[in-house]
Length: 329
Image (tube, rainbow, N blue to C red; front, side):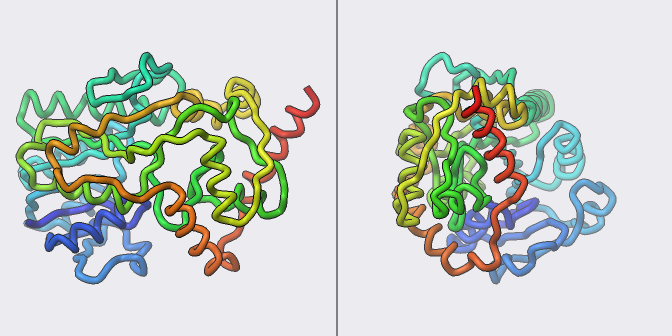
């Protein structure tokens, strides 16, 4: 099987690349070549900017693929380009959507693929919804062979998922320094965090699978923990007890609208994902990496790289500003 990943070196896609290679799949990457040092051996790289259709066509030449996966499509203009480029080049096109597209506020804490899509708070999610709608129309009207995947909060080795980002090291650095960290609400809402190594098993099982064409899948862990526990688990991995300050999501949204949109459009609600559909199609999908294990791996990675990975000064200032306003209320 020959698979093209548009992107391929990102948070989720890199472990999916590794899993695909492990399963004997012929993997191509199409990207700008900025992260060649991350590319596993065996990957064939096509160097082009997918946003430049002429450049992408030239790089693709007369190649065709069993599966094309776009990891970096975020609005309908990107989808239109892909339909033009790949309608005659692939037997399956996989779009990476987002579980944040599900209806907010939530009507029920258990989320299935049938849960309606609606997000009045976060533009990122609304754009993903629009992409899905365009692809479904193309599938219905012209048979474009789509599969839609909705990850939730997915992280890889070296990441620390917090209220203030996942890839960034600002919050862990604050924990180590004994500084307060913000957790939205009362910290007791449930959240699901999925390691990319687990996600990759389910995802790669959909590639080239005829039962996946025309379908939507969410792929998440089965472990749901509170946001307080998320931060305490990170603290334990780092050997510290975090100094948590609880702050209402609405308050954060007033004083930091961009952060608030992400909270009110996603992280502020308790959600538990029903993974029965992905398990029916990919029997090998059994997520086994606990968040505690994932954080131990991230702490070990950070210990080996902390001299080259620095906290974000702007994010640290953002946290300090919110704390200052909160304490003065």
